[in-house]
Image (tube, rainbow, N blue to C red; front, top):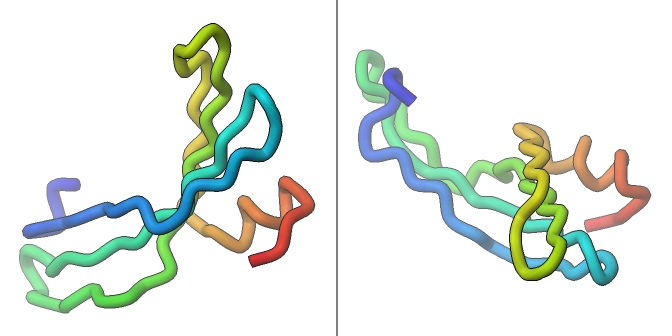
Length: 76
């Protein structure tokens, strides 16, 4: 995250896939530290959380939301 200034990652949507998995669709915004390039309304990635006994046991980070949906056989 060193190349971003004021980077924000916000949860946009939560999808319960089954009793042990939750998909969180993300929204990213920020500004490049060196370039000053603004990052607005970019379809962010997604996080897939595997949960057991109320605790996250595995976290899968997808930088590309479309890839996450395709891997999981879902549509947006």
